[in-house]
Image 1 (cartoon, rainbow, N blue to C red):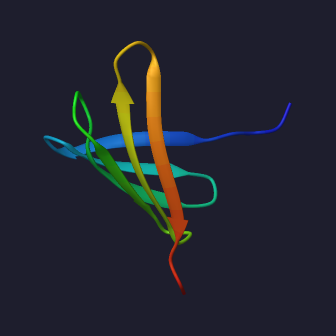
Image 2: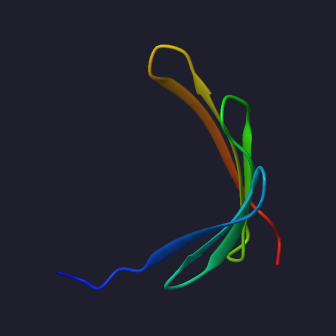
Length: 64
């Protein structure tokens, strides 16, 4: 079984710092509204939970 590490810290209401073994990310929003995540690996994700167990997500890579 491989070693995994993931930790999430609440910085401010609606702002989280997520740390794992290879990168870190900042997440804004959440709850019932949209969520925007920006990762140190160059990935931007915008997601939204929808009623009935559905969800929507779009991801793109930033140019480094």
